[in-house]
Amino acid sequence: MDWKKQLIVLVMFVVSLSTGCERTFKKPPMRVFPDMDEQQKINPQADSSLFEHAQSIQTPVPETVEREPLKVSSPQNREWNIKRGAYMFLSYCAPCHNKDGEGFGPVVQKGFIPPPSLITGRSKDWTEVAIIKVIVEGQGTMPSYAHLINNDDRARIVQYLKKLQGEAKP
Ligand code: HEC
Image 1 (cartoon, helix red, strand yellow):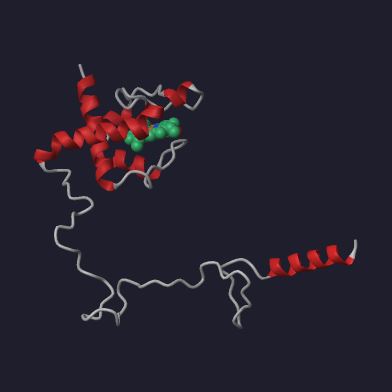
Image 2: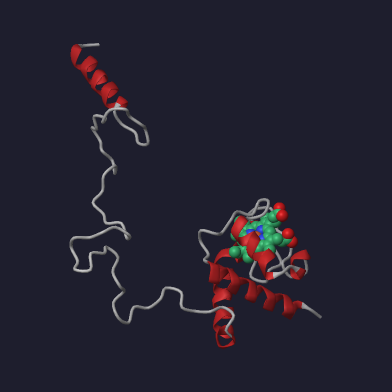
């Protein structure tokens, strides 16, 4: 190895020692790559010298719309909730459970373990909470969908599922 190659290897070694996050140091470390250790940001509860009221957090401007203003249980929303539940079920559950809930969705047709029927299986007698628990925690080979489906939509999916199950009853 000529001296240039040796120098490159040495430099790479030294740099590799000084990178990485979440290490604790007794003395301030030499930071070649500071990553995102220090960021310019204002924490919501912190004081602020920018505003007269000295708070960082601001009152929402008039006519700000809540992100989730709908109440699942209110009867006038029932129709909309079921529509939204159907949309979410078709997007997130039907790939495995199929759009009829019987369990032979496209993913299963490609070889995934078939889930039990949601229409005639044991889950038809489950409470809303028990089904939401499966959406949140997953069950066996079914992964959790907690990060993709918010609280209200979970309840809407169950409302839609109850409707599907009801329609299937003789
Ligand atoms: C990746 C495929 C897949 C997706 C997507 C999926 N599931 Fe499942 N689900 C399964 C499988 C497989 C099981 C059976 C798991 C076990 O018990 O081993 C299951 C089980 C269940 C059960 C319990 C059934 C019983 O009788 O034990 C419920 C309820 C359920 N899923 C609801 C849902 C809902 C609601 C969604 C959409 C949010 C969903 N699943 C999305 C694969 C999936």
